[in-house]
Length: 247
Image (cartoon, rainbow, N blue to C red):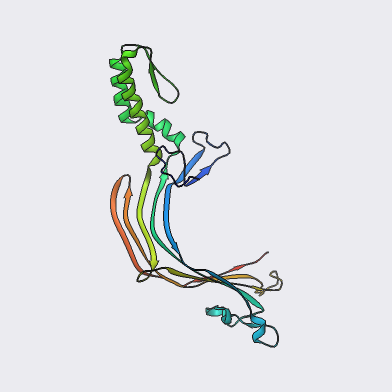
């Protein structure tokens, strides 16, 4: 994971798959190179509702806790109702990049690097050597300018590879249809019993309410070239109910 400072040398990945030997060349894969996000969070509330007070048997309808659809007429003794709001005002991310270790190898064979390396090899007065990272040194002070130009180019190329990505997405916004924060409504309840019995409905249920939103993307670039922008208005998500139970 990275931090909130600008990563100019590719030291961090926002999301990386790490193999058994972390950091070994070819053992890690960078999924998300960079991610920065600006969001507005509204008020949030969590309410534990005692549905048992609405019926003499101690069981009340789930619609009294905000449950909708086929489940609203089910009964339970209690439910947990959570409400919040959120708006994404700006998000930028890079997808499918290279780790710093991978950039170290790729940078040494890049055409820009090889061009200045050829100049160094051809113009050097002294003996030039290269270490495992491709960094050059010369035993003659007269080669300082050529060595500096080569090493500077190598470093710049490596950093460009390490901080770049195949896909760049910028200026992403997510808001409620018409603007403002999206309301997030969730209800959790449980049904007792044995889930292994045929026809049983026992388990824990999580219902996420419907959402109507607008999504905007200022720019999308693939391979460094823009493919334009994107705008989706009035995207309606009907909500979902998930049942969790053992086998």
